[in-house]
Length: 104
Image (tube, rainbow, N blue to C red):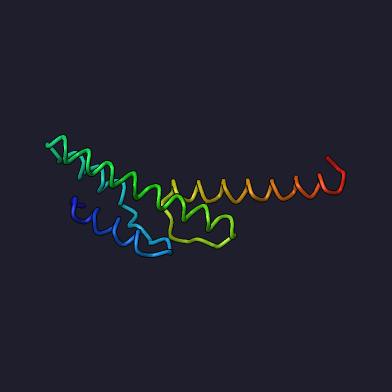
């Protein structure tokens, strides 16, 4: 992955409301890209893009989990977030219903 590839990925993620699939080797490729950067300012710029990409994907994953939309193409770390949010939402719903029924 090059810095240009990252920019294209971020720009595409910005322009669409759907969660785009990332290649399985995304994290490895990104680590390689960062390891090859020698300019401190360029590294900071790339890291800002990565944070922006993570935040955009995180927001989309939260919405998908809340809406209980099945997801197939997630990175393992994204899948964990998705599952944890779904479980938290289910627990919340159950707790609210118990509270409403006077069972809490």
